[in-house]
Image (cartoon, rainbow, N blue to C red; front, side, top):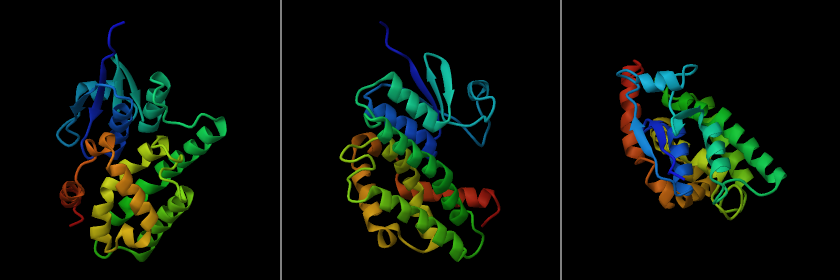
Length: 220
């Protein structure tokens, strides 16, 4: 059986692309990351592979495209079963998917409400962001990872978003470590994993991107 050709249409700063790359790394799979120029003109491959949203990431498995990061991570876990990213029981899997959905609906938008702010960041935006992290901290409890002792699906969905937290802290004037120490320890634990460390960019580099993007958008 010939080896599958795995390609991700990628953007280095996108936490949604990072999710796919971390999942592939956890499975020990070789893949090619093709960088997309999202500002200078998207490739024909991206536009034809994701005609509805025209966004990264797109995952190509032997040329067949899949879109939307959570769907892709699920597909990777089902197609290459070892090591599993989801718990063995159906209740555990349902709970993991609940928190993945919560993260997708809440975290990046709450980040954006802070780093997109013109002038002083509204107190409400900071309060909302910290409240979301406290809810996640409560779900984490005293566990090493969201599923328990093993790094898995929920961690993969959430940890890439934290690469933008330094920017949020700088612009918002607070620190996650002071507000949510357990959550901060979870972040550090995840970032020490090889599968994560080789994908997630330095937070200072993301901050430079955010400042450039704010200028492009006329915020600064």
